[in-house]
Length: 477
Ligand code: FRU
Image (cartoon, rainbow, N blue to C red; front, side, top):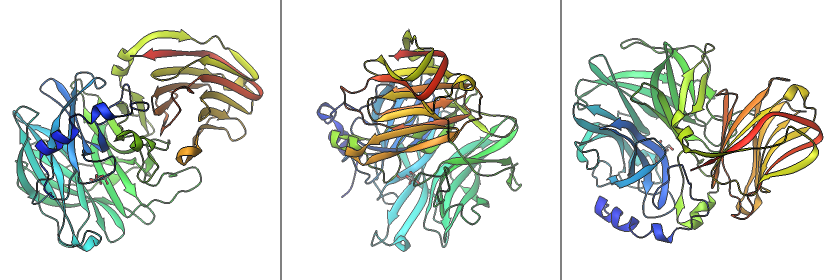
């Protein structure tokens, strides 16, 4: 089958009316219909934020990848635009895989991976991934310029180019797999078309993954941050619990010199569903990141509803003095706030109190005074399926979801400093929760699937007392 944009648009027309919207996000970006995975080509161009994404318009399963497209003035209200890229071939006949966008003069350039098999698609030896270019003047219609980097000899997995400008050159990092070692390759160009191979930028040591997907390199606080999504890191204790990870290495780098790490790989988000994040600069110079709020091979119950997958809130990244990334909701998110409902609970003891009948589009603010709380478990619950609570015996903040009817049960957690105050901002949407801990210290993002009429929000404290210094919720637009 050959694919075109016109065909994809036709497919999407009308499908939207047939969606079941019970879990469709109110203030996050999702596709009009069909499947979505990685965010791609995030950029500010011509007065708009543009978000592209891996998209399969023809079903709620992953399939031949297109680039979906939306634009926004504020990163929250998105306007859907026509599909930007279809796998028209020949170099991308089996998919337009992930990539990035840059502005070159008055042109918006998309650099993406052309994915194709020569022969049997179940054999990796037949896989060819090459880097391609497409350009646009109006930011809506793209002209395909074809392949700009061929598959290097002996490579098959070679994808997800992220391009940026530095001095007089363009640079590109690309994810690769060499045997069972994840790698990031570096390229340089003067014109986005002729690319010079600059060798291996960084690679996995034993245990650090067989493939590094979606690399991204940016500067913060005088350091370079290499963000990527490794496949193949084994879970250890509370760490790396998801099938694949996303995280970062901090280091130093200058053009022409090797990348020198200054620390270990750190996971970015400790929830069940955060992958393939990509960053971009806002016009006022903030480094913002958006990720895919799902995890490969997890049950995705919204598939029954005609759509699948969504993107995270935009999050501003900063690097602290310990070379740790901090992730906070971008300030634009505050503009969604409508009424503020103070929650009159200051202390709870062996009880559960309902605070709101329906938690659907909300930002909940909770400041727990942990030093004067001795309850074994205290926190917030949504319906019967979600709890976000302090486990005093473990000294961890736990996100627990329990939807056995969809095959989704389990916990994720982050450590707490005993006795330290705990400030939480919890963003609840129809089928997601994003928990921001202590002003960006940690983040937990997971998909949730409550029944529409069972979304009551409660506070609870079991086996002891828990004290709040602040509690309430913003209704979000
Ligand atoms: C990451 C990823 C990328 C690839 C894309 C395909 O989630 O596997 O490496 O380009 O998804 O849809």
